[in-house]
Image (cartoon, rainbow, N blue to C red):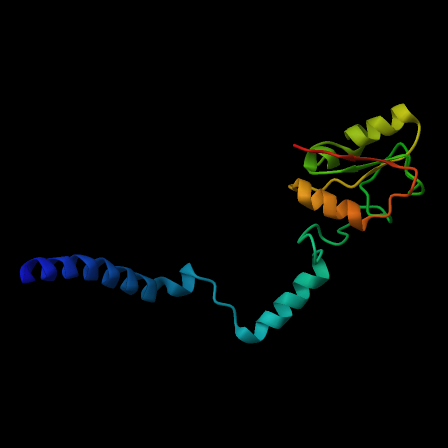
Length: 147
């Protein structure tokens, strides 16, 4: 029995010692350890660049108009949209030009502005929170895309 305990202890101790030695040697490259003095500056930069509730998008990185919606070449006036779209990159049209985004095509067909509040990689919960933050007007039909 004592020999079994000794062998079992060695089997447990050797991998632990190997991992501890590797971690000690490579730690600066394996784990990011911020300087504690820099943490406050890093957090202040984060708060200045990102939405504090949704995490992203950048508060306005130049992709959005004055009302916070994506560009709509068919109706660039940001006043009184008849439809407001909320969801992810499929709604925003990240992969295509602004002229062929489905919100802009819908705007041309309806003959009124469609405000596109889609953001890449948004979940339904984030799209809903963005809807709550936006003032889309009382006459707008709101479409919350669910994927």
